[in-house]
Amino acid sequence: MNSQLKLSVLDLVPRLGESSFEEALQQAVILAQKVEAWDYGRYWAAEHHDLEHLSCASPEILLSHIGARTTRIRLGSGAVLLPHYSPLKVAENFRMLATLYPGRIDLGVGRAPGGSAHTSMALSGNFLANVADMPNRVQALKALLSDSYAYEDVPVTAKPVPRIPPELWMLGTNVKSAAMAAEFGTGYVFGQFMSDKNGAEVLRTYREVFQPSSLLDRPRSIMAVGVICAKTEEEAVRLTEKASMPGPGLPEGQTENDSYSRLLTGTPEQIRAKLLNMSVQAQCNEFLVFTPMDRYEERLESFRLLAGAMLDEINE
Image (cartoon, rainbow, N blue to C red):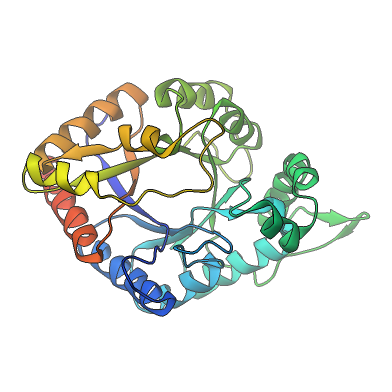
């Protein structure tokens, strides 16, 4: 396998310290601009609802704003929470983005609630029933993105129709989500930083049962990892001890301490070695990097240091 790694960014769009929601969204733009300059391949924004310290309820709106302020980095959702929405409306939103920003749009979908039980019910009613309908919604979304959807045998097209379609990815933390992505022939992102499963085994399952589709002819995978990178080991430990991990949305039975233990922490050289080893074990050469910090400046520095380490690897 090619050892050259690709780095991308997952942004939960947090409110850090005493920042306002407005400041948090401005920091999202700054992060996207910086990581584009540092040659990260993708910037993905997460979706959450009614959470005190997370600011992005509508990734598609934020991505449109960031698209106008960047030039080449791919922009995506990590993830649109499909049980809440009509597949047609999701397809229309991301085809609109793909028309505005050709060749730059990723549509990542997931099935998490993204907030509390009451918030989920206020958003879309019976969430459990909607989750049970997830395979039908993915099938409909896939059909809409390949212009083969019909409602009561009448063709329906998600417009506008972009010259370059958005890439469809499914996000998950276990074999079940990997198998669903494989069944529908989509790309798959495994959330290692949120999962106690063996990422190499989950991605192996995805590759082994993948079925080519109208959207994707071969399996494509990304691993989402938590990273705290600093100039020294001591600084990395200090930053980890005061890191801000996401609360709601952790898998059942998992605590924040479990998530901390899965963070990759260390110097640029140490993180580079860990990612290279994970890449070989999982046969995956792209990492979606989530960096939990309590200061925006420290978060940017971690991404900058990591980019420098990986550029050295690519240039060897």
